Every structure is written in structure tokens, then in C-alpha cells.
Image 1 (cartoon, helix red, strand yellow):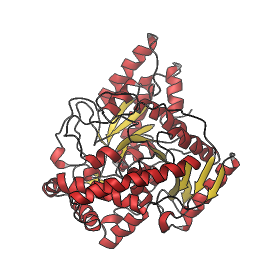
Image 2 (cartoon, rainbow, N blue to C red):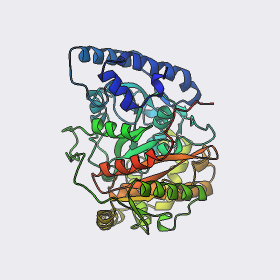
Image 3 (cartoon, rainbow, N blue to C red):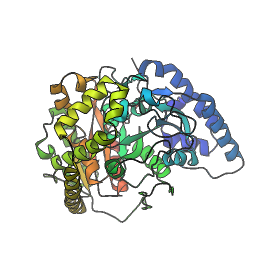
Image 4 (tube, rainbow, N blue to C red):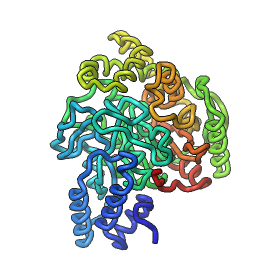
Amino acid sequence: MTELWTMTASDLAAQVRARQVSAEEVTQAHLARLDTVNPAINAVVQEAPEEALAAARALDAELSRGAEAGPLCGVPVTIKVNVDQQGHATTNGLRLLADHRAEVDSPVVANIRKAGGILVGRTNTPAFSLRWFTNNALHGQTLNPRNRHITPGGSSGGAAAAVAAGICAIGHGTDIAGSIRYPAYACGLHGLRPTPGRVPAWNASAPDRFIGAQLMAVSGPIARSIADLDIALAAMSAPDPRDPWYVPAPRLLADYPKRAALTLAPDGLPVSNAVTAALINAADRLRDAGWQVDEMPCPPMRRAADINACLWMSEMQFGAADVLEREGEADAQFAFAQMSAAAGTVGFADLMQALQARVGLMREWQVFLDEYPVLLCPVSGELPFDQQLDVASPESFARVFEAQLTQRALPTIGMPGLSVATGTVRDRPVGVQLIGPRFREDILLDAGRAIERAGALVSVAEPV
């Protein structure tokens, strides 16, 4: 008999919708899996099993009365601890916020509930959601269930670890510099960074964020199948009037040419042989599925990454430096110091010039993606890093920072990105990244399905 916690979200939703299994049974199975594996990986750091079971029973009662089922009907979902969930602490990995309880759900959480998703736990993030590694002084370190010696990614490392270990079928993540795409990559999963404005956002428990985060930060799903990302996006992207940036764009738009550009080393990014091989293999999979794939340079990424750093550091330097000092979390302070040194002190003129240059880059990327609706490029220049590599030394931080060029560049230009798992190399997951036009997540998901179909399906990991 297939264990419920090994099934995809799409299959679980279909079975609950057809009343072949109850939402309560699905939830019980995933909560039992959480009890079994979470102590070994520390992915879920806030649990509320009775709350989850009550929601599942309520859904079963609604279905028995003939209520219409949402796209996540009975699907176990985790929520990252930097997003408001009513009655729970929005800690963002900080001891200072250990008791910072939300009074209302953020729009994305409310949308997941309305779509029938069952919230089975809240997942870990590094302090301030600042790193591509997941460790903090409040909740501790999250381990990768596929290989405890490598990072689970960050900042949505807890979400990816939970999905990979079968604690949930969908993990909610956030991304301002790769925090969905990289954890999916590191844990051998698929992760979608939607277009800014696609998924409504707002934390009532905190002041509104500054301009960099308003322009670049998004919520999105991490999952074990491309189909699961599709239904998760449908759920997360429902309208909510509380987000002024929300765009009610259709999820399916006009037909498009099946043309993809392949860039093996954007802007001279050093890329390992294993990553290059994965990209070439993914290009071949697309060609076999009827896509035209042409190798060529892509528009600038280094300038986009520099703008990301300027926007992000202007926010951190203006609004968070004192909080960093009061929190006293050594890893976050080290990472912030390295990033500040690279970006320099960001003044008013720097910010204005960065915002001006951003528009020109967006224009160049839009013209490029109009001709080639998919760019195939690295998620990272390297295979997933050893645990805590970034804080080992300034040189190690610089190595990690360089390898994550595409993670840092994409949010600046405002396009969606998809991380697709393609296999394993020397006990480390590997994958590729797809970038598409604004609000054309449908194109990325189509290309992702073509790559997925030609490879092995993603399985649940047994932590060791």
C-alpha cells in the first residue's frame, strides 16, 4: 500500500475530492511522518497538530455536504515562519520575535486555507531570512534529508527539507535572492518564484517593508512535482485587496513559440562540470519534447545582482542594522558584514541610480524573453554547498556569493523563475533554472514538465 505521505499534492487532492480518502486520514499520516523524521532534520519548528486535524475534519464535513473543493483539497502544507499565520509567532528566525504572534493570516496563508490546504506546521529559516543556509539561535539548524552534510538551502530551507522528507506535499517559501529556488535545488525538488504581484503579500504584524522588498520579495511553492507547483500557484495567487501590488493577471495567457535560450555561464559565472552537464541534459530533454534550444549569451546578470544588493542593503542598513546588533546572531552578523562590504554604504543617490538602471535592465530582458520565452541557465554555479560554508571565512562567503549570481539577479528584473530537479551527482542534488516573461509562469511550468517527464520522478527522502 502506498503511504499517503509519499504521494504528490495533485494525487492527494484528487483522492480527497473523490472521497477515496479523508482529509483527516491524510493529515494524520503526515503528522505521524513529522513525528518520525522531524527530530532528525529540524525542518518544522512550530507545530499545532490539533489545529491541523480540526481543519481537516472541517474540510471533510464540508465535502460531505457537497461543498466545492479547492485546488489544494486536503493537501498538507507548511508555512515559513517569516509569514503571518494567525495565532502563531512570525519569528523570522529571531529570538527578539519569539513571542511576536500574528492576529490575522497573511494573504498567501488565507489563500492556502481557502483552497483546502491543511497547515501542518511552520518551517525554519535563517535569522532575518538572510542566507542560503538555514540556522539560527532561536530554532537551531535544519539538515538536508537527502544529505545531512550539505545545506538544505535558504532561506526557505525548512520548507524544502519538509517537502523532501514527506512532512508535507507543498512547502510555502519566500524569495528575494533565491530563497525558493535554491532550497528546492539543494533538496532535489522543484521550486517556483512567481512574478512579483502574482501572489498577494502582507504581514499585518510588522510595518510595511521598504522599496527593495516591495519590488523583489515574493511567496511561492516548493514541491516534488511540477503539477503540484501548478495547483499551489493557483491557490496562492487568489486575489486579496490588502496587497496594493497584487496584479489580477490570468494564469494562462496566449500561445507562445517553443523556443529556449541556453546560457551555460551567464556573465562569465564559474560553473562546475556537473552543473554544465545538467544544463546540457535538460536542453536535450527540451529538444526531444519539440522545443528549439539555442545556446547564446543572456542579458546582463551581474548588473542586476548588484542592483539587488543595493536595494536589499539599503533596506537592511536603514531599517535592520540595530536589530541585527540586538539579536546578536553571529552567522547573520557575519553574512551582513560581508554583504555590506561588497555593496558599500548605500546612499540616496545610489538608491535612485539603482532604481533607474533597473528599468533599463527589465526592458532588455523583456525584449530577449519575447523572442526566447524560456532561458535555461544554472540555479547555482556549484552543486549544493557544505553546511555553513558561507560563514567559514570571508573567502568562503565570497565563493558562495559568486556561485549564486543567478539567484541574486532574477528578483531585480521582475521575471518568474523555476528551479527544476534533474538528478543527483556524488550524493548531491542537481538541477536547472528556467526564467520566463513576466506573468508567464505557465510557460515555465510547461517547459518544466517536459524536463521532468524525461527524467526520474522526485521521491521522498529518508533522513539518515
